[in-house]
Image (cartoon, rainbow, N blue to C red; front, side, top):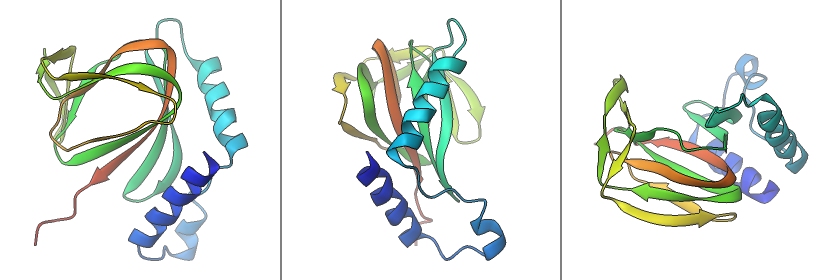
Length: 162
């Protein structure tokens, strides 16, 4: 995990111009394995009763935000119309459905939709160590959680077309 976090922070740094000194202190571009373990423990402790998902920011460097998602139950399905989403399974396992069509869809903002689930699509079991890239505009949903699953998620906006 530390190598993954370091690799991702290096890749993010390479894609962005140098930040001014004042905002550099606010940007968090590194987490140790101990920091990640502490975030997982915090999520586990702060999760309320039947709360399906608790997300916390791990690394930030605009426009990127790497989040830790602690999932203990099935949450809503989603479509991100302008961003791909990369998942890394830190711990646990779940069933991920991609493709198909959102059921009971609602617009949450100008670029995102949520729904209660997905009709159709492809289901696959994902487990610790797996990487999954969900292309922009693709419905995705963790339809079953095996106990808990801890994910790293990174939304990847596409650069403007030339």
